[in-house]
Image (cartoon, rainbow, N blue to C red; front, side, top):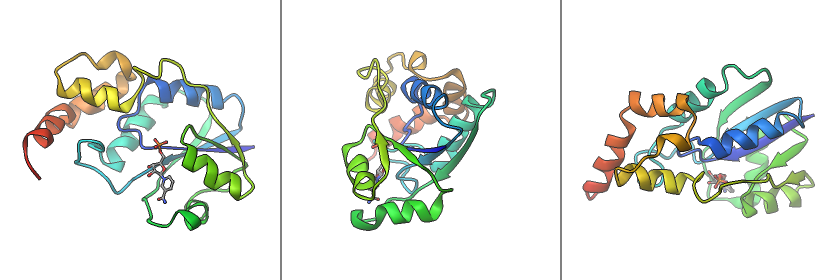
Length: 168
Ligand code: NMN
């Protein structure tokens, strides 16, 4: 049984990690799609696909299960999006998503779709973490320590602050 999960992971946080840990007990292998892979350097999507891959692979390095990380660009064509995802990924049997559009598109194609149980959604949220980064508040406890290290290495908080100051 192979599962598929997609998220923007801007950044990868403890909520994502909890969900993936749980799913890893239900499936033999998991495909982790990096959504909106083409986006970076904006306030909502500050990190590149490569940076998000680093966050995930470093966090999961001691995990004893098989997973694949696949960057997936957005396409302006929801009706063929599932076929587009299928063309980029290994085959899968079950889809996990908290995003109602993702669930709708896969359900219409006949996939088994599950909504992962999320906890502490208020704090384990990319929006909240990016807000804290911009306001100089404590964000590190909301992400795995490997993610905090990647964000420091790439000077991610400084990037976000610069993005908020310039009128690109
Ligand atoms: O659940 P979130 O974190 O929002 O992630 C879902 C991802 O799937 C996003 O990156 C979103 O852009 C992507 N997606 C893309 C399409 C499309 O390209 N037409 C459709 C549905 C979801």
